Length: 138
Image 1 (cartoon, one colour):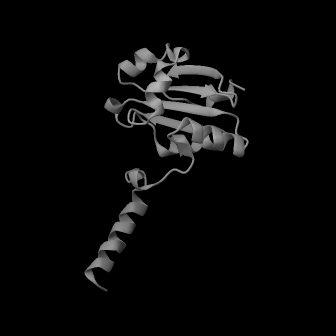
Image 2 (cartoon, helix red, strand yellow; image 1 turned 180 degrees about the horizontal axis):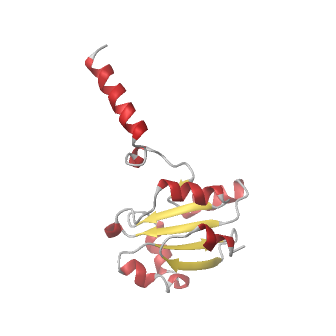
Image 3 (tube, one colour; image 1 turned 90 degrees about the horizontal axis):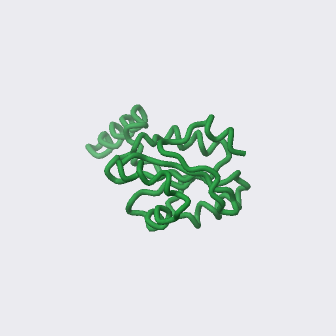
């Protein structure tokens, strides 16, 4: 076996053992970075609505783990995660409906909200969504 073969076997084993640490290598096909894509996916797959997660650049991943995103997806929601470099980020923050979460964003903390398929904002809160938060919405 060549040197490159051994390298790939070791790398593959490390990634398999430490999946959570190598989350950047995993592509999440159910997490969208565009409002239009999230809406189209929600309508196509008959989702309950759209969970919006806003993460400022200065807070890093803000505790948004792959496990959390998978759990939210399994509850029947389309997930829209916007970071500062995403085009819809500033558009969302300039919307008056999000005025109550602006202080959290300005303090470099995450915030979230839920839209129904008619793009009506149902809830907006600082922090990250939990299963119990979503059970009370619909």
